[in-house]
Length: 333
Ligand SMILES: O=C(O)CCC(=O)C(=O)O
Image (cartoon, rainbow, N blue to C red):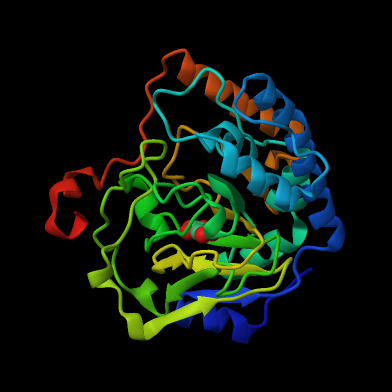
């Protein structure tokens, strides 16, 4: 059992964040990385055949290969959508919408026993639901990005609280964000930062983002951020950053010459509203009803693809629109 100490739990409760080093094993990281290499092996030739990419760059290691591919593509989603662990937040779901719902992310990440132990320590229950608000962020050097009109999946993340990303009916959900470092994360390569102690506030006003591909790209105006309390959330490869759902956070931009790779996952007690009901979550741990725990990676993938097909077939979906009325607010311009 990967147990947090009372001091670590106290730190999280008082400051709204906690850094936990050395949670993923080398095997976990290697398996996830191998899954991502396979995706580039599968998708790069298709992009070349479609005339979107000049060549597959298959002689390069994953990190450089992804950067070169991204730099060349007119639409980053042509590759990114295959790497994210969520479908895009679009009512108008493209017919070829995709995600990575592969076994390595299910077995080594979402259901990783060390991660679940830590989530159990903070949330205070062994009845844990894996919330479907989850993303892959592989951020190349900012200098290697083709333009600045690009979102937080590959570039700097604006200030926000994770609760504000959920639909308003999840206000009572006790959600923990678990941010997993696949590479070392530091100020130079664009680690996260947060406003210490901001979790005790209510949900702050957020501005709706302008990026068409994601209705989750909301941000808190800089004027509301207490810069004196900003702390960088540096962590080593395989470590975690835990965030309270109301902790204001964002990221630096990647000024290094290598990628910064992370996943962000979320857990809350079973039975609470996910705030993104249209996407599939699952019971990740249950001491009281172990038979309800999802252990089959294929079944998980199947749920995502069935969801995609229902949306494509016209099912009405409700994503978070609660900040739209602020689009004309003077601080959102
Ligand atoms: O990785 C990042 O840059 C941002 C992640 C984030 O904002 C989150 O997990 O809520």
